[in-house]
Length: 171
Image 1 (tube, rainbow, N blue to C red):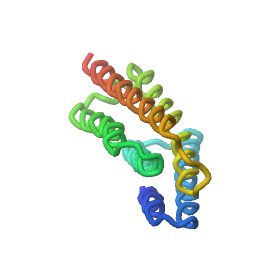
Image 2: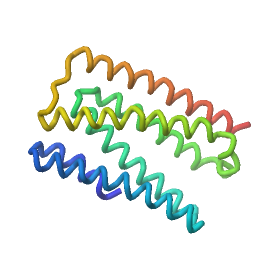
Image 3: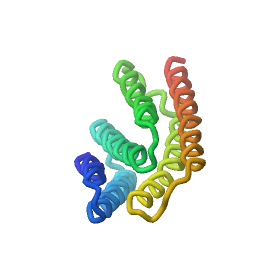
């Protein structure tokens, strides 16, 4: 949660060293998240607080990555905001539904598929953004349009998945 804003800040500094530092920080945050989840499952150590903190940490990393993508490949900040707002809406709904944990199995497909598609779009976008920021790549207008189209389709899917999750929570 603390390192993700640093990754974004380093990108905004704009020097080669700062951008490489940003890459290192994001890689570190994603690796520690994987390790944390693996260890929690292996040692069977779970808690409501741990679940909440893991989700907040994930969102902090994704938000930094989304804004780095928006900045690096000239995506609209609205795209990053809409992708992130879906998670805010879901967390808000869960806050008002005392029974939400009873519905996890029913909603697993939608939450897992959303996470998969987010990573499938975000990782290549981050690579392109960093390559552009480091001067290794120039994005053609056609590629930028293609990336924007992929994100807008993903936004439609993400709000469909949000609607389905809330619908399943209520059933």
